[in-house]
Image 1: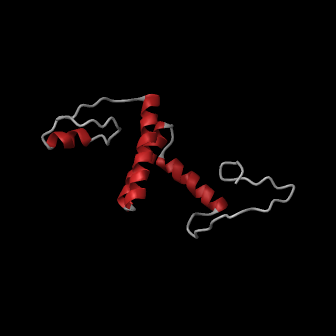
Image 2: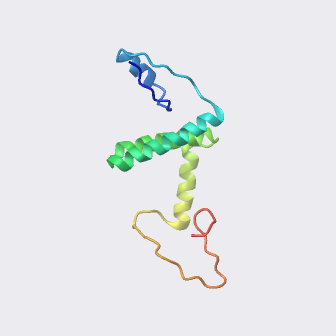
Image 3: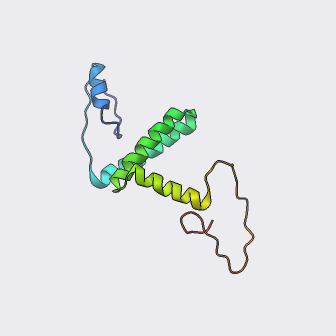
Length: 118
């Protein structure tokens, strides 16, 4: 019997499968396909966290984020530096503030974290 997955997995998973007495069929992806599969994996891990609410799933999300950072020429340290700078400028997400609306003055364009409209 063969089960089909066609998804990015952690590097040691093929050996775990062999240890269980099964034979994995794998191939290695690089470049743009690797980045695309990391994006898919991030979606998968976030969905698993939403479903379970288990912080263990958040560790998987962070592992994929670290891999994505590396795939785009960055590092988890650089990401953390950016996160800290944004926190220093705009705060964290600890207080649970929900923005309901903004009454604009005529000279205020309003910007979100990415420079776009809120």
